[in-house]
Amino acid sequence: MNSKKIITIILLVFVVGSVGAMIYKELQPGQTDPDAITADISTENVPQNQIIAYYFHGNQRCPTCMNIEAYTKESLETNFKEPLDSGRVVWQPINIDEAANRHFITDFELEMKLVVLADIKDGKQIQWKKLDQVWPLSGDKPGFLEYIKVETEEYLKESV
Image (cartoon, rainbow, N blue to C red; front, side, top):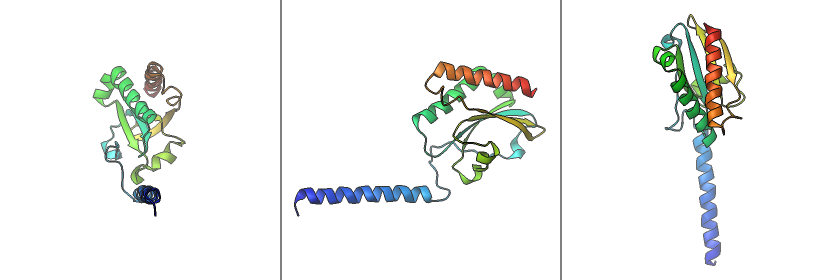
């Protein structure tokens, strides 16, 4: 065997092994990216009346997904400091790839990772709104920040 064939075989074995390891890791229950932000939402910890701003993401996060989360958080922290401090508005990133959080896919009719505003009254969710323009605006930071601000202001007015 010549050296080219040996190197080709070694590289092929490495690629097949890497793909196999990646598939094995993805199929393991309860295994998540340690850097992923996760949440366990229980009604015991939820104040009686509040707006929850959820950002739903998965284990695999592209730069756009990371920007959507960062821009949403920035807009909320910049424009809604007092409601965030008081608990009237809550920022909650959720990893929907975790088994305990998969119900959110059905609860909010999620077709993609995005931001949802949910209105909680007397400890029960009474309405919600998907902010589906986060993807088209993800490349326009000023437009994105304004979109989150305007949508959250309107939602707060409606929920009073």
